[in-house]
Length: 258
Image (cartoon, rainbow, N blue to C red; front, side, top):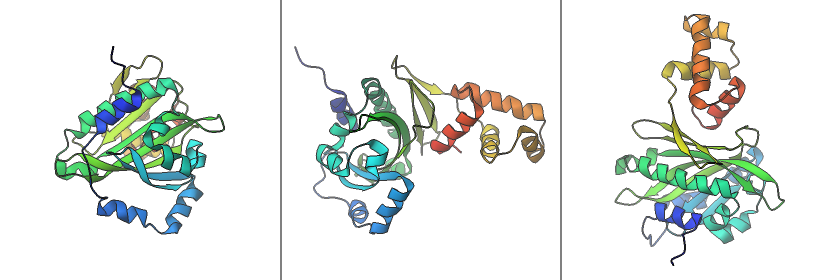
């Protein structure tokens, strides 16, 4: 009886894009970044990695990977994506398959010449070498695309978002196509659903909320009734399955929605 492919093997199948004989110019440029960029990332507590889709290895890692992911840069150079994924809790590994498929479906609708506009943001948990479980947000974009429009290199920024209280949930936000999409994945059931998009008015109100404005102040700025503002607030919570407005605003910021 044939063995079932691992989560990593499925992930690789979904993203496999052929062979590259040499690194593209953009990757070479990343690899010669000034050391100050590396130090800036470290001061911000974030990290950057370039991913070679063909080899599933990282030709370049910068920033504070130890703080964000709980493992050293040398570890990830050695183990590549397979070792990275192996540090996800089992329920988050299952979510990764949903995420990979939705990225593939979404990117297939983007013309090859526009593929560099694709933005992918998703979160997962990782167990560090210290045993601590961290929630990580990864924001990725296409760095290099082959002649058929398939992505060959990704660049990813990662940051720790353990403060975002979404226990049992993962999220995926896709933009760069005709319409942005936001997905929620239940880590316990592995159910993946697309959340209803926020309207332009709701996004406008969310931005003002994020700037500290109260409902009455927002209604005055936008020349709408206070009850209308509160209705939009409740609709945003309903659409995103949040119960707390502050946590919603924090989430929208992390996912670059506002």
